Amino acid sequence: MSKRGIFYISFFVLLTLGFYFVSSTLIPGFNKRSLEPISKVRDFKFTTQDGLPFTNKDVNGKVYVAEYFFTTCTGICSVMNTNMKKVYEKFSDNPDFLIVSHTCDPEKDTVGRLKLYADSMKVNIQKWIFVTGGKDSLYNMARLSYTIDDPANNLNSPEDDFLHTQFWALVNRQGDVVGIYDGLKQKEIKKLLKDIDKELSKTSNL
Image (cartoon, rainbow, N blue to C red; front, side, top):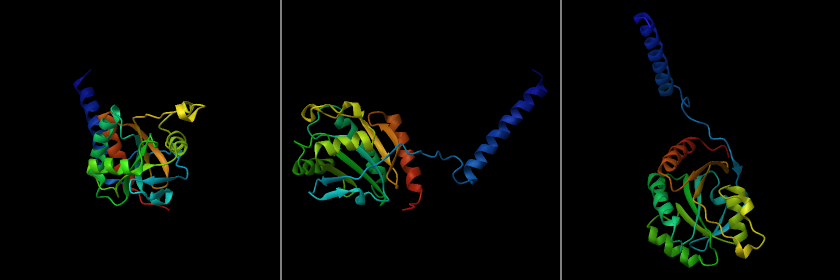
């Protein structure tokens, strides 16, 4: 290739990069990926670690991350909640952000046990909320609202059914699930942090 050809190619590459840089700097939303809804969060009613009712009204207009865990877990839950604490620490001062941790084991995870667990995490329980409720209601939320577990896992016998998922759901201000993330992978958590920022930057139209 001639020197002139190399010059023109280099010129157009630099021109394209320059256009992208200027556009992403000056044009609002140019470089912001729009998160499309995956599913809609259905109405729910659970009980918090303080024994208080927790419903859709409590997340209305909020951006929140939903996860599932259980306090006696000796496997992935500890790693997940260590990772979730990074999310908490970044956004705990934002009044429009919440974390909602649902128990997978409501029979053992009573209100009192959830309170002890929340205290051990040393977090603001107005910002990171731990909830329990009926097993069917909790599991249906995971599978049908948050879509972080396969509905086919719902066995014929509720007693034999157990949900144990490492996935988290990001919910926007309108109650739409807009992202699913693996709570064990640092790359996914970094992506979640960016997506939370994007959702918080949007104003509520409620």
